[in-house]
Length: 510
Ligand code: GLU
Image (tube, rainbow, N blue to C red):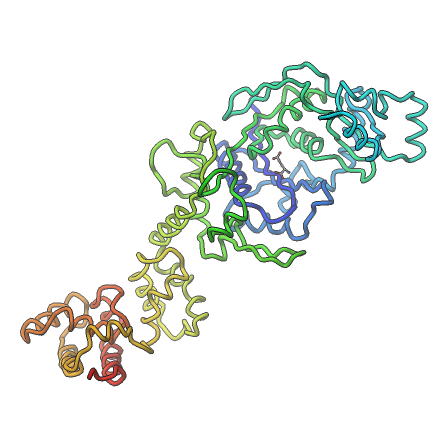
């Protein structure tokens, strides 16, 4: 019988979620939604040494911001909980017991000093079939001694007893069957009596099984652990329901070789975290996509294409389209270069697609930051202003540099442009222009343009000089959208006022 698809994203709350982890979560989500399956969020917090306060909230907030929906988890609940590993100690204890009873695991009492000595004595020492009988464990010690040590409360760990000489096969959807010989594996620690907690490997397998996970989709860095995971599934007698593995390729540095790191982000000036992160210990702040002004849809689209393509050159895809088109067949096996310029391009594209109303809403706080009260303007005015300049922006915050003049009169005038375009004659010509504007029957862009251009031609004035002086007066510099679109939006009074102001303020040329 075909099992219902169930996938899990299983982060460890050891810090902010890296952008590579976000991509892993996204691929899990896309696949689950496409298959009508379930998406689980499991918090793997068995390593108390590496626990970082705030990291779990951060993970939830980041996924919610991006629209990566979770069906079962700590917050969402579900029938397979608890979804936080530190709350599942009883379960792990039971399963460790099962392996011990079946002789598939054993207790090891070696102290750190003894392990150190073994490592010093034997080059490339590995705790495995070839060495375990020389160590202090429940296989090498007499049963009475083992009993005595346990009763005396000695600390021990439980190790997985790996049988050497076996071919272990991992079925990976991207890589096919990966085979390794079990002799190269060591007897991994599965459980530590001292803190009554399992290690990652045991907890991960027991949970994947109990939570009926069908596909393990995770980063390539976990591929070396997969043979051990296969052996654990077998040791428990769960081989029939072994999940399919998908080890996703790494995200690589934008330049050069190797894995994308936080340092690359700092060096090249882009975030590697979805949200801003305030390190609770060091106080260090790391920038996030959200705070940098990225739209969640753009980040999702950008990340989806880092390691996958839809089979053609379509680039702009909504979450719904990604869900429909996603397939592991079109996932690449080699690492994906993290092209952050492309990330900006996606943001630019999404801003172009956005309705003027939404863009205006996003712009209002930016106006307020710059000391302009958005309530002082009609919504319609703000919408039309941002619409006129949006083709020039990558981020909402860029709107200010491009649209500020719609909301504040120029306080200064670009000196270079003044030098080039403002001559002794200009004030007189601007006076005439005011008369032309006031006399125009219709102030719309299309109607006003021929009137003004006609006047310039009739008078034999220099078109570039007059139009640039006009622009300088209204905008403060010689750039911006089409001049008559600007005047249409500002209206006659504001336009004329600005020309008067410029004539008063721009120093007379000598
Ligand atoms: N807790 C592991 C991590 O932090 C999970 C790896 C896995 O998905 O198996 O990535």
